[in-house]
Length: 216
Image (cartoon, rainbow, N blue to C red):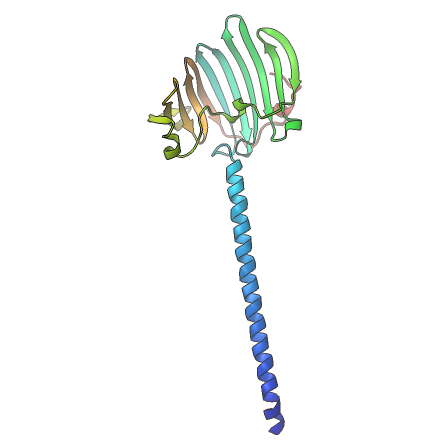
C-alpha cells in the first residue's frame, strides 16, 4: 500500500503529461488543417484569377458581317489559358487576311501565323512578345454587373448560338457586345459585326491545331 501511495503522484503526473501531449498534438493537427485550408483557398483564388472564361473548354464558330466579311473558328481549354484562333477575313475587296493565333500560356511555344496578309501570301510565323488581345475573346473589361455598369449600360439579354447572353453597350464608344461566361458571342464595333453561329463542347484543343505548320 505504501508503495502504491508513493507511486501515485508519478502515475498521475504521467497521465496528465500524456493528456497534455495529446492535447498539444490535437492543436497542432488543427493548426495544420487550418493552414492547409488557408493555402488551398489561396490557390483556388489564384486559379480563379487565371480563369479567363467561366467555361473550361469549347469550340466556337463566328461569322463576320457588315464592314468585314469572313469567318473565325476558336478552340480553347483550361478556362481560356490555351486558345487557338483561325481567322479568314476580308476587311475590304482588296484586303484579305488569313491568320492563326496559338496561345499556349508559354510565349516560347505560342505563335502568330500569317498565311495571307493584305491579300498577299506570306506563310510566316513568330513567337508573340505578349499575348494577342484577340485570344482573350472579349472587347469588354469583364466583371460582375456592378463593375460593368461603370463603363457600360446593360441593354438586355438574348440567345446567341444557343447560349443565354447578357448585352452591354459602351457609354463612351459605339460598341456593344453580348457576353456569355466571359466570352463575347456577338459584338458590334462601329459597324464591324462578329457573331457566333455555333458552340461545341470539347475536352481539349486538338493537337494538330497547336501546330503552327498545320495551316487551314
